[in-house]
Amino acid sequence: MSDAVPTWPGAPASVVLRVRDGRVERVGESGDLAEPRPWASVSKLAVGLAMAVEVDLGRRAYEEVLGPDGATLAHLLAHASGLGLEEGDRVQPVGTRRVYSNAGVDRAARAVAGEGREATWLAERVFAPLGMSSALEGRAAAGVVGSTNDLVALAAAWLAPGLVTAATRDRAIAPYLAGLAGVVPGFGRFDPCPWGLGPEVAGEKHHWMGAWPPASFGHFGQSGALVLANADEGVAVVATSTVAFGPWAVELWPTWTGAMRERALG
Image (tube, rainbow, N blue to C red; front, side, top):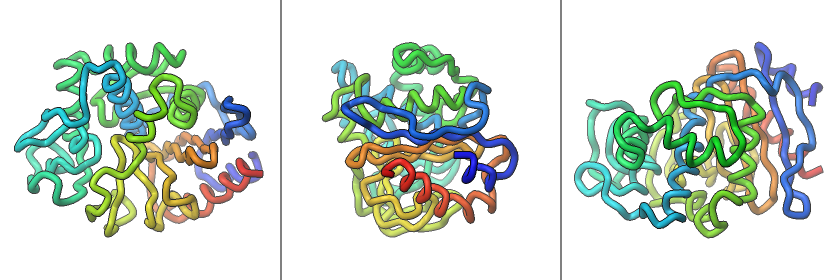
């Protein structure tokens, strides 16, 4: 993958994955895969997977009311609760717009894990079972620090579910309230703006996911990290960065992610 990765600034690390015979295999990799790096909002994929575990265990339900004005766990995870980006920001009616909300994801994690136990909860539900050394060092919505290898483990758990049932994974990666319009930070407004129960869903949006099919899902973060996967094709790309998200990513990622998908399918 060294021919593609140098187009990134800084010292990126990336891995291309493909499912073969039920196993997730690496078909290309580059960079320092062991160095711990901030995942920023890609942390939401860890939260989403932990919530899926809770649902499979029967301890929580996506329909459970955990937010204001009847907002459910599903509303909070899919940025449909009406809460603003941060606590104290303007609130919209529940289920009417896709308002990207760190506050909503933080509330969900706090309600399920318990106040101040979010780091332990993520470790118990996701990091330890997947053999990861990552840790939550801040808020649940954006505070995970971990290696690219660990991010690969997380992506693989979404791509070929073993930690949760396929049915629960499929529900989490399907659009929730699919017709809602909203804004993807850094890329603008989309109508509709589909989102799953943690992961963003590509839909017909033309942005960082490039030419990936509509059912593709993933997340990126302000740290420059990203995960993008397609369960039907059994492919994924994972990357971390030493340079924060910015205009370079807006310009580069649509083409780069497309090239990585072609490599995975090849």
